[in-house]
Image (cartoon, rainbow, N blue to C red; front, side, top):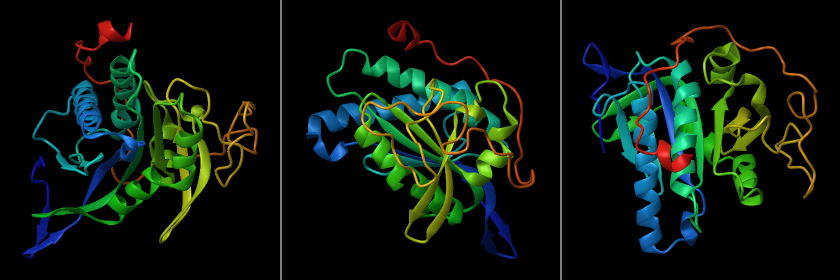
Length: 259
């Protein structure tokens, strides 16, 4: 576990701070033997490190927890969220592409993203923002997409708040028109998540409940499933808000391999 020690305290009581939360999970890790698990875990951490570096987030300045076949992280409040939904995702995609080139068992990741109040104690992170990031990552539509579309190596699901307040505003590397909404129903969660497959005009979703198209059928173009157009952004711009800018240049150690 790595930790930046970000917490709030009022009158001796630890209080929540608005932070950007990332929950990542390796798809199909239960089918891997121990040797391949180690390879994929190392590649996942390397990809995350590349992505952090690309947006100027230095080691030791954020909290990160190991989840066996995944990662839970919370960024410092001063990290611009537009960098996380833009350059960070793009760099993660490129790092995965470089690692997976020529591999029989590619590393495939589901990523849940959210922002909200997070409490960090000596055991780790807690808060509804953390819970929702995990629900988005592990949602039935996300798992169906990855189970039924083996050619997809990275799927990102952001919360409705994050889409409306940050993604919809656009920015460098941010592609709001490439997201599609689907209903997320898991445990106590019943809401909307926004799905993105980087470098594609749309994820394979055709309905508001996360329906996938029949095998061999393409995803309708031009907007969110079932509507033909992108709805207006929802919610007011509060909390961390959106910020412009592409961030610093990413590390070049994987660029040659990615072509």
